Image (cartoon, rainbow over all chains, first blue to last red; front, side):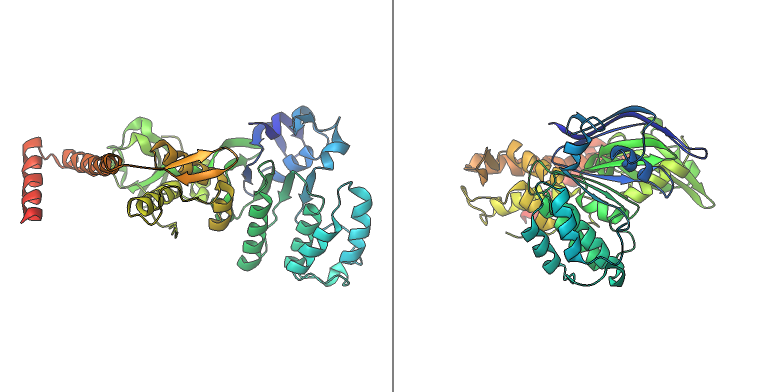
Length: 282
Length: 126
């Protein structure tokens, strides 16, 4: 399998924050959820990928090509969605069509119109009059209408109601019907991710904590709850992280290492994240 | 064919898919030669990851329930009685393994466990 995105030891420093040797791969044909708390480095990483921020060190390849040397041709094949539109808010959806058809070689006007109709986005209304959900859907229509092979989305579903989120997830799954297409999306709404993502990459304080197949993550880990004393019965090598509270202890365990007679809960991605950030090593 | 996925279930999503498909095949709801939805289409409809459906299909193929032809898709495999028996036997072993593990934890010895099993078998036969 080839990779849509390859990041090797990416480094970028700011006075208050730095990305430290960020590495991960997104295999072509798959969806990766990029998660982490606010300020963990998700947007910085995405901006480095798109060369909107100059990286200091490291290697970034998109479709196997260096992201700065082949920037123009790569960008013809990427659709990007940020948390806001960042275009003059007096423009209409039709204006946007006229602009983007000059930028993208493969701009597909009829598909753009189809998406606008489907999302019920008015053609001749200034952007500033659109709701947040509308703006987001417009942004996604813009990102999809040149038939990219890779979608990069920064917090596409944050601040949206569940119905709009569901429509957007639908659209993503439609996009994924083409086996070559891939999606990288950052989010802190992990329930969306738990549905459709193939891989989860978790960034914390500028460092990648893990980048893993989602099924492995959800089913290889489990949560055991009990008292400190009872926790001694768990095999030592099965314990990954522990969190104590006033009434007992919660342990993130490797399911395979634990006898099935122990009662183990299925973790959510959110819980796993919390264990890695707040928990202690046993 | 219907597939119901539960997030509350302790079973992985791919296992829920394989189990329900196996059940549909074993009960004849799906017949040998019947086409199955494509991996990507199934993922889209159920709104789950493609890797999850891929894994479910790979497991079904490994266990001999379906066959996949490149470019054509996946179909329910031809099967025989012996195969069906094998599968059910496998399920029995799985359940018994769990019973043995639980017994061990409670300190129940092998003989006592066998007694329990004999009793259960007798009750069932009566």
